[in-house]
Length: 253
Image (cartoon, rainbow, N blue to C red; front, side, top):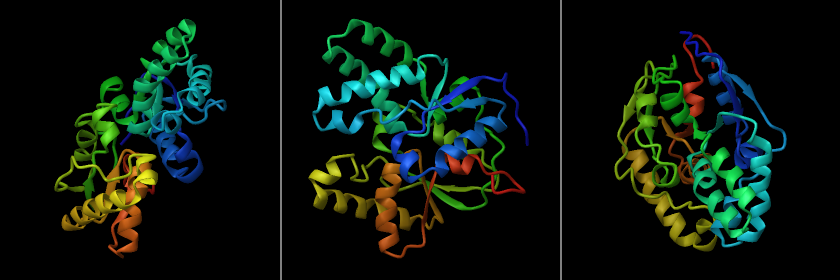
């Protein structure tokens, strides 16, 4: 199945965790968007959005990341990232950090770029107007809506809309889906015992579904839950939403 858009040029906001630890996810985004007729570019200047510094209270240390984000992406109408957490941080934290820096020029630039920054699910559903991307994934899957994607980026039910249209998929509801997995960025470092307990609860609910795959739109949370699932020899495989949507019938992607 081939769907053509009007050839929009999109800047890929890969995110640092994906770039370093999960490069298959941004590759899947490129393959998916190109299949849908978009032209995807990767600004080489991009780096961390600064969320880790901001969440820990190091606002001054995060401001250079904000400046760099603006520099990397200011020339694009559409900036797309496969992370509700990082997209949410850009939209919520960058204006706050620009105000903290007392830099009116930076604040104005941030406002412009923030308005053009989308989570992958938002871009597909709201900008391209597509829920059926021609994906094929004949497996039993459950979806965890990560906290930042729901509460900060506010992606809503868009990932569900996209997954429900995947050919062959068996999408099952996750019990207590709205409960945090315990990652929370630096929360898991500062409160490891609480984090592990929360992740164990989440992993238990995942296994209750009988799913072959756990899918999220954030690899950090997926890594956290996936670690528990792996240590418990559950057989459940973690996978990012983009990697499901990139797969087609008759091919790996």
